[in-house]
Image 1 (tube, rainbow, N blue to C red):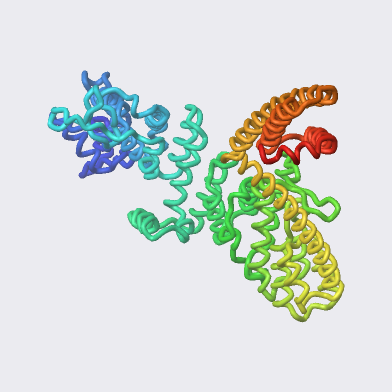
Image 2 (tube, rainbow, N blue to C red):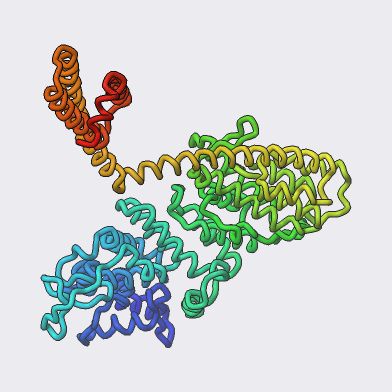
Length: 586
């Protein structure tokens, strides 16, 4: 100041005017410096320390002109207070935006970015005491919340990995970009950086919030109204920069967000390279998209169709190229007219994409401006193995034929050749056989394959019914034996065993009696006398009675019964007269 006044006085002017146009912070900063020069207490904050540090450097307020000068004080405050705290480092970095070239000269910007990147890459739950510098409650070393220095015993909520998204989104994009790059070099995971970029883009690109919920959309609009909305050119630059910074890996960025970026890029007419890059990103994860995402209107005046079919075709092309490079095998095949495939095959990405494209074709088919070659190209782009059934494709073709009744017969046949009649379900075949919009040749093919399916179904039903009857009989037999039939059979076997033993004993007794009877008969031929004959008849009658009773009580085999009867007949023939005479005695 003394040198400037001396230089101004030498010019000989009546009034001494000194101009200081390069002082950062303008009059407010100069007022604080003047107070410091006159010994007034100066309050340093994270918001003014960058301006004071740069102004003191510009005014040469170093230790050379006095001990404890302003350069030393501001530098000490930056290192010991500001750079050790998350919020203060962020405020200091925000103040660098106005004087960015000057702040870079004295390396304040770089130091603030390094401080923020280090804190963002460290788990805030592992910080010392106090634990959360970014606005959370003060905590004790044990982790409980402090209230007026007294531990309440309440444990704070664990900080998530996205705790710094809202804070850094307040930065302008040049500084935000530098901060994100520094975080990447610090080893922060790509999905966390992608989440921050997504948060930042949704905050400053109004077109991304059109399909969000009411609460979320109102929050975004409220935050956007705090500052001036970015112009279309600024949005275009921001969108292209966000596209460059986003990681390339699949699944790190939500598919719906990528579709929002692509839709916004078409509206604000971003560069063709940016649009192509977004199409490739979406193609990598097209199996995660929904039908609503694909229905993007045509924003070009040169396109007559309602929806942008060319863009969807490019996205599908990128997906199929990626599927081939990753070795995506066909989930199912058609062999001898029969569909072969496991139930899990319908869950493969290529099958999901085929179903999605068939639904998209059905949605765009009513557009009378949609030309037949464009419809055919998109339908034919899906490989045959990706469609286990062609019902969805048949539905889209039927809607297109209904909306374009002026098509020639040859065009109708060419369009219907896109579907395989063998891959239509029985319900679809029944509908197609009665569909007057289909060409006659196609209806004949459908009827033929419908008959084949019916025959196969009927044969299968008979086979299944036979198997079911056999299984029921087997189960009923097993069930009866299992519920008590086996125990009954065991008891019956035991009874039969005892009966057989009794039969053997009685047969042996009968054989003994028969041998005794022979001996008695032989004696009768030699002995004469009434007394002897009477005693023999009594004895023989008693024994015959016991034998007959035994034969009636026991269950004797046919052979034993036959031999017994033979013996009885012989006895009766030989001594019929004697039995007749002795019958009154018995």
